Structures are given as C-alpha cells and as structure tokens.
Amino acid sequence: MNEDQKQGLCAENIYLAYNDGSDVTFAVRGVSLDLSDVGFIGILGPSGSGKSSLLYLLSGLKRATSGEIYYNGRAYSDMKEKERLRLRRNHYGFVFQQPYLFDYLTAIENALTGASPGDDQALARAMEIFEELGIARNAKKRPRQLSGGERQRVCIARAMMNSPTVIFADEPTAALDRQNGHKVMEMLASYRNRGLVIVVTHDTAMLDECDRIYRMRDGTVQEN
Amino acid sequence: MWRHNHQGDTTIRNLPAFLLYLVRNPRKTIPVCLVIALAVALLASVTILMDSIGQTVFAMYGYQRDLTVLYPRNTLYISKDTVSKLKKLPDLNRLYPSSGLFISIKTFFGRTPFVVFALRHKDAMEILRKCGLKLIQGRFPDSDKPEIVLSRDIAANRHLQLGDIALSPTSKDSYSPQPMRLVGVLDGPVWLAFTSYSYVHDNCPIALNGFLASAKTRAQMPALDREIQSVIDSGKIRIWTYADLVREAYGALSNLYFFLDIITAIIIFDIALLCGLLFLIYFDQRLSEYAALLAMGYHQGYIILQTIQETGALAIVGWLIGAIMATGLLDYLRIIYFEPKGMILRAFDPHAYWYTFALPVFIVLFATVTISLRMLRIDPVSIMERRS
Image (cartoon, rainbow over the protein chains, first blue to last red):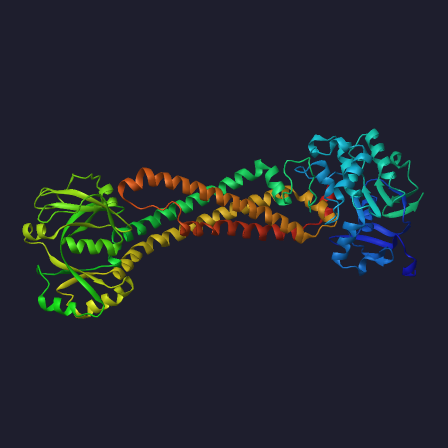
C-alpha cells in the first residue's frame, strides 16, 4: 500500500503474540482495518476475544508482534517512543473501563490533566465540555463525590480536552448500569463528526449508535 | 501535568501539582512529615548539646586567646633570669604578675577548679579591655581586701549574688584564707575571675606567683607562645596556651563526635529507609494514576520528577518543622537549665542543622532511586488490564 494514501488509522495484518513458557498465544491474529477520519466504530466480542488488545495496539500502547499500524500514513514502528507519546498526548483521547481519576483533584482538574502543556484555553474548554456533557455543576466535586456515570463522563471530558482525532474507549460502560451506559455511549457518539471514536465492548446493546461494528473472536475480526 | 489551575473555584490557586497532592492528602503526608521532623529534632538536639560542651569550654577559657598563663613548678616564683628573657621576646606586649586561687564550678564533667587571678588593679583593667569584658554590676576589688569579681556565668553557675561569699577558709574546693565576697560582676564573651593581687600576696604565702603574657594583637599570640616555649624550662614553668586548649578540647570531644557520627548515620539510614519505603507504598497505591497518565502520553521522566518533587517538598517541610521543634525545645532548656548554671547552649546552632540536612537529602535520594526503578518497569496496559 502506498503510504501517502493511508490517512486516519490503518492496521495491516497485525498480530499480537504472548509467550507463555513454551506456548505462544495469539491475542490478535492477522487483523487489517482501514478506519476513516471520523465516525463511531464498535469492536464487539466476548471476554478474551482480543478486542482490548486490538484497541491497545491501535492506540500505540502495545506493539504488534508483526504487521503494521499507520496513523496518517506514518507507521508506528517508524516512530520513536517520544513521538508515540506525543501522538497519544496530543492526538488521541482515552476512556478506560475504570475511570482512573485522581482522587485529590476536582472533576475539572481531572479533566485538565488531558490538556496539552501550556494550553491557556484549557480551562474554558473544559468548562464547555462539562456543560456539553451535563456535569458542569459537578466541576468542583472530587471523584468520590460523583456517581459512576458522572465519573465516566469526567473521563470522557478528559479524553476530549485536546479535541483528539481519535478517542479510544475500552469497555467504558462495563461498570455502569444500562441507563448510564447508554448515556455514556450517546456522549461518545456525539463526537463522531469531530473525530474517530473506537469503542470496545462485550455488550451488543451498547452499540446501537455505531456506524460500523467489528466482531472479534479468537483474535480475528469480522466486519458486521 | 496539572498546570491549569481552576480559577475561582479552588482554595489553592497557582499551587504546583506536587504540592496539590501533599496538601490534599494530609492523612498521608502528616505522619511522614512528623517522622522526619522528630528525627531532625533528635539529631539537631544531640548535636547542639554536644556543641554546647565545646562552646562552654571555649567561653570558660577563652581569655587564653589574649593571655598565655605561666606558673612556676616546684617553686613559688619564676626566676628573675627567666623573666628578663621573657621581657625581651619580640612579640611580647606585657607581662602581668599574677597569683592564683581557685573557685569550683559545675561543668558537664562534674566540679572543676577555675582559676581566680590575683591582679593589680591597673593590669586587671587592661586585661578586661583585651578580653572584651566590662563590669555590669558592683565594683572592682579594693586592694588588700578579700574581694572578688566574677563573670556573670560563673556567678550564675555558683548561684552567687553581690555580697555573697565566693571563697572561704573552710571550703573544700574554693579556698581563701579569709571569706572572699563577690563585689562585682563582669559580662563579655569569655569567663574571668579576679581578686586583689596584694591581698593574695599578703595572705597566701604559698600561692604560686606567675605571669600572664600578652602580645600586642591576638594574631601575634601564637608567635608569642612559640617564643615563650623556646626560652622557658618546661621542668620549672608550666604554660597554658590557647593552642593547647583547642587541641585538648577537640581531642576530648573527638571521641564524642565520632559516636555522634555513628548515631547520626544509623538514624539517617533508618529514617531514609523508612520514609523511602513509605513513599514507595504511596507510589504503589497511585500506580493506576500513573498508568493512566502514561497511557495518555505523559513521559515517565515527567512523572518521576513530580514524585521526586513531592518527596523533596515533604522532606524539606519535615526538616523545617524538626528544626523549629529543636530550636524551641532547646531554647526552653537554655532558659530553664543551662543559663542558670552558666553553661552555654546555642539553640540555633547552624552547624547542628547542617549536620541534619543529610536526612532529607538521603530520604529524597532513596525515594528517587526506588521510585525511578519502579516507574521504569511500569507497563500501563498491564495495570489497566487488571481493571482494579
């Protein structure tokens, strides 16, 4: 494939293998994906199917055993560690299954941890995002004072702080009830016109709004 | 990391991130701070008390900076021949004839005799000026009378007031043929006790008759001491110089300082280990935070720097609290115990606090090494995959 053609996020025949003594286990087997710049992508699969591993490979948090991942035509394997850090810091946003919020920071301060260094407008933008996500009244609260759904919304705000080109969400609704889960998915879906949102989940009901769904089983992917 | 301060909604504005963690986690930071503070207070107090011994010795015998003391051995007088040789020494300014009695004072090492110089009035005035002493209470001794003038610290040490008897015929260790009253109190950087030369000369037939020798300047004293030693017969004359005093004092204290160094090293090692492990435990408790930050693209070095700054800030605050605690406690001790006994205690002794500064340094070093090693092994994905 000509690298100039690879805009957005692409994976080419990627494998992720774990060595367990003499055994080799493949978490991801020969996955190729061509993801556009914008949209709402779901990756669905049962536990152990390799969907989270795929997400971590796509986000650059893990290195593929073989195959290649490109971001705007540039291969991850050609990037230095600092470049990959910069990519994650400035172009990607993350929503994890657990909120991983700092308990000594307020909600708004937690969101600000997602901003780029030296961004003078970060506070104003954080407040706008809080308004948009309906948690502005919780801005001064600490994470322990928030419900599970509110905490996950703070995480979404943190992920959106840099207006990322890609948001990676790993089971963002797993710790929430159905109603809150749907709200969180709606909020992530609302970002589909501004960037690419990739959500990993095992819950089919949460993927109503997805533009595209990939099903994973035993490390392989099938587009739905 | 958390550079964006939330204007108007937090009470702590413009506070660096590492301080934010410390200030908002008092249940974790206060115990560590107290451990460091108590260790610093302990080390500083022991060092200051040790330094007080040397300071007291140098105040007691500090007059030897300006005066070399010569007394005869096996005879009551220094020979005329020796005196004439002494008078020809190039660095000699004056020879003050002097006899001596003794007053007993309480020191760290028990009761010690302190020499009471019998001086002529004119010589006494010159010596006081040389030693930076002045009369702050009472008057100078009258000739031929059993009267004594003491430095304030000696009077305090013996609990003597003006008019009290300082030396007496029946005293075991503060003897005078007649009861000798305190008539004047001196103040200044060194201790001195003196009485009337003619009284001692007339009433103490077996008192030793020596000299106090002075150079023109304090800087010339070492040269004068060498010159004196070159002309006297040490079998017949005993001399006391400031150089001997320093050598003997440091020689005596060196063993104590050696023990102190061992104790200090053990305490610093223990506390640094304890605090370093505590910081490592706190670090482990925050692993998921760090994993999230690493996943979000924060550099490991930046996170290590933040944690080192947290450790450093806590160690310095602990050190400051410890220093303040030690100063307060020792100043209280100085007022209620040391000053009334005429002993010197400098509650704020920079040497002691420099001594304790190794503690925060080692705590930060230990924490830096252990936390850095831990941080370099963190795999954010493996931590998040545990979904703690």
